[in-house]
Image (cartoon, rainbow, N blue to C red; front, side, top):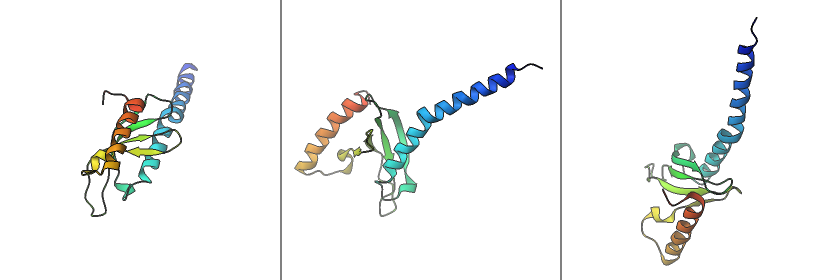
Length: 118
């Protein structure tokens, strides 16, 4: 009996487990962290999620229902390795002076952690 099919299946299982630990689990943890900041966590829709330029950071967009039950549109976010999350304040319409400064800071963070090509 040939043993190579068993060895190939075992190697595939190890590779799949390695993928789950290295890629799938961190993404699921990031999504759970982002959901904690939403009014309706179950309604979260993620778009353009990718690993950032800096170790452990994730970048992307999230859309969720507001208190009135309507979707508000996709908002960019940065998820930091310490599980802190910053949302793009420019996606909320009118901004005060403090919010404009916050938006400028977010833009700098986005370029540093996520890259300029987005």
